[in-house]
Length: 298
Image (cartoon, helix red, strand yellow):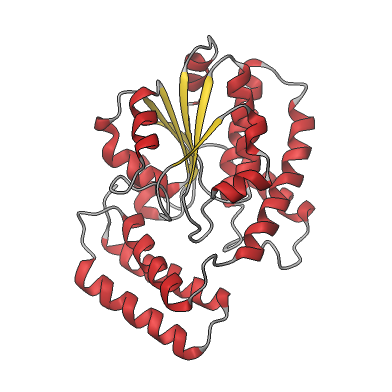
């Protein structure tokens, strides 16, 4: 999906929210905002995916603030919350098998897309039970489009090469359960993390914190510090994995931007699991407001 006019305001709101959350000195705040607005005034266009521009302004934030890992404590706390929720889900899913198990874990993986310290407030004293309840409420809303049955039909026979594109810290602990189930069907899974921290996207360090390797997946670096994966900056490992994968599963709206735009360059089946954040995305599927989706792109 290419940028819409509404994306400009969203990019600025996202950056301002980050600046406030970091509690930076006023002069630093002003400089970051000034340079970011200058960047957007010269570069924002409707021929580029939104996450490209969000990445650029957050790189400006990192450079000017001098903070190598923004929100480091929040990232760690969010992963801890994700691990606790995943432990509960692991017990709940033990009684399920086949499609029921895949469907259950996929719905939770989508709900986990909300497990973001920028929106949930993880690390500010909100209990795990309250966060879990919030995710349960999200699941009760259901999936506006649910193509998990199609995903299961491809996965159930095993022998498939699957590429699983991770999104944020915290939710990756829930993704780990779904990945483990996919591996359990007899498929091989490659999963991706970012090469550097930016906003709440998961890195190799985060993968280590939740012991992602226990899922049985191979872990690769998708590219540098980008919000969602970047088609322009993707690593050779990711390029190779995209070329080899029979199934690509992506998490989060930023990754939907990328794969909806470049789907014709991918030979495998693409499934996007995410909760939409805005009407421009929801309207693509004929809805308004935030909705939950498990949608096959092709």
